[in-house]
Image 1 (cartoon, chains in turn purple, yellow):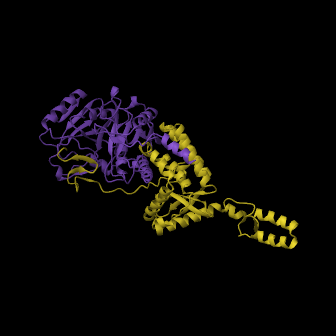
Image 2: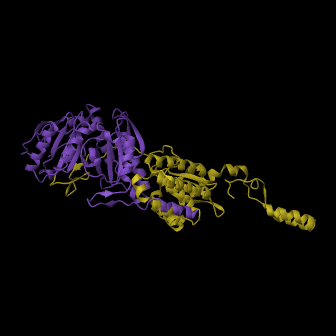
Image 3: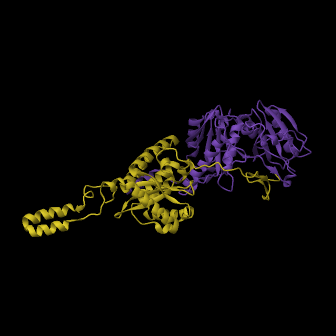
Length: 310
Length: 273
C-alpha cells in the first residue's frame, strides 16, 4: 500500500511552485492551461472583452456571464441578463453592494482561509476577473465592491481584468477600485485625478481635479480619446493614475477599451462606479441625495458614490 | 469492540470467548464434569450492560466523545492529541477534503507535497497537535459541542465521488489522480471502520465549524483527527455559510492615516495620483 502511494507521489508531476519568470511575471506550470479550459467552459474566450494587457499570473478567478457567476470551478449565483435578481443590499457593505455578491465572496474567502490551514498557497493575493464583454459595468463593479469589502486581509488583493488580445491570447490588465462614499482628505490637494467617464457607444467625458487642466470635455471615439490621453501625459508626465468611471449604459467592454488604451500612459487604472445599480434602485434615499449634489470642484457632476469634501 | 460495531456477544448479559468455549467442550468429555464446569464459568464473564440500545446510541456516544474532546482542546490544546496509528486514515479524509476545497493554484502547487506529508505519521500527528493548539484560541468560550453525525463510509464515499467530479471539472482528472482518490478512500474506510464524522458546532461562534473523526482505536472510542469544515460540504451538499448581515461601517476617509497611499484599496502613491 505504501509503495503504491509512493509511486503515485512520484507519478504526479513534481512540485509546481510558482516562480517568477525573467519578465518578472509569476508563472505556475499548468495554470494557464487550467484557466484556459475553465474560461472556455464557463464563458468562452471569444466573450472576454477585447483589449490588451500583460501575461496572466496565477490567482483566484471569478467568472461573470450574463446568467451565472462562477468562483473558480464552482457556480455560485444565477444572474438574469447580466443582473442579479436578488436586490437585497448588504448592510455591512459601505459601498453599497448586493447581499448575494457579499455572501458569495464572504463564503469564498472563508473557505480559502480554512484550506490555507493546510497549504499556504490558499492565501490568495490575486483575483482574475473573466467577465462577459456585454455585462453591464455596474454589475461587475458591484461584485468588485463585494470582493473588497469582504476581503479578510489587511493588504488588498491585486485585481486583473482578463482580456482577449486576439493572437496574443488571454491577457490581464491590472486595476484597482475606487472606494465609494469616501472623502478625500486635504492631503490630496495636488492630485490630478484624471477621470474618464465612460458612457458606452465610445462616448467619453474627460475631466480632472487640477484647476489648470485644459482637456475637460466630451470625447467621441476611441481614437480621439487616445490622442487626448497622450496630450495629458505630455503635460503631466509624473502622473500615472487614471480613474475610469462607468456611467449608465456602459458595458465591461467599454471600460476594457479605456483600460487597454491607457496601458502604457497611465499604468494605474482605478475603476469607479458612476451609477450604482443599488442606488439607482432606491430613489430618494440619503445616498442618492448625495449623488445629486454638484461637484464642489466645479468639474461637472460628482460621482454618485463619492463625496468630495475639501 | 465498540458499541457501534455491535455483536451477538454484546447483546447477552454474559460474554463468552469462542476459543474458551471450544476448550470447555473438550474438557467436559476429556477431563470430567467438575473441571469442565470450572472452565465454563471462567470462559463466560459478566459483560457490561450494552445491548441493542448501545448499538443504536453509537452516534450519540460519538457526539459525546467529540464534545468531550472539544472541551479538552479548549482547555489544554495540543495535549489532547493522542498517538493512534489510525490518525493517518483520518489524514486521508482531511487530504481529500482539502483537494475538494482548495483553489486550483494550491492544487497545482502543493498536491504532491500534501500527498507526501500524509505518508508521514509523525508529521500527521504534529499537524493535528498544531491544529489543536490553534483551535484552542478559537474554541475558548465558544461553546463547541458535537452535533450532526454521519457514519464514515458514507462520508468518504460521497466525498470521493464529489472530489472526482471536481477534478474532472478542473481538467485535472487522470489515471494518477483517480488512483490517488481510490487509495485515500480505501485508507480512510479501513482505518475509520465503524467510526463517525461528527460536526462540532460552536453556539457562541456560529462561523466556526469543525469536523471530528471519532472511531475505535486501542480499544476505545477516541477522536483521531479534527479539521475545519462542514460535513455537508464534504458530502457535496450546500453548507451553512454563516454570513451575517451586519450593520454598516462608517464611510472611509481617503488618505487618512495612510502616509503615502491614497487609500488601502489603492496602491498608487499620492504623487502618481
